[in-house]
Structures are given as structure tokens and as C-alpha cells.
Length: 65
Image (tube, rainbow, N blue to C red; front, side, top):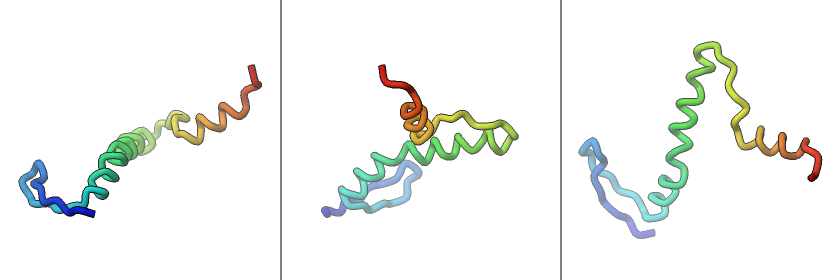
């Protein structure tokens, strides 16, 4: 719960708890992936089946080895 003051790369001040910082680090990449993933759809391209749920469904339809 400790709050830490810091400076963002653009120079503006920030303040987050240590927990908020860890959550941010853990989820940060998902924001970028989501933004990039929408670009093909906006340009009329069908996206690849690359979501976690697509992978799990394909694994469940395979026969056991």
C-alpha cells in the first residue's frame, strides 16, 4: 500500500502504490496488443485466431496422444 511519487517519461508527475505499479507492469503489454490487433480489422483483414481462447479451444478438439 506504500505510495510512491515518480515522474512519467513525458515529465508529468505521477503517484501510485506499489501494488498499482505491479498491476501496471503485469498488464501493460495487453494494451499495446489490443491496439495493434484492431488495425487489421479496421483495414478489412480477418484477424488470426491468436487469442488464448482460440488456443484453448483448438487444444480441446485434438485427440489425446
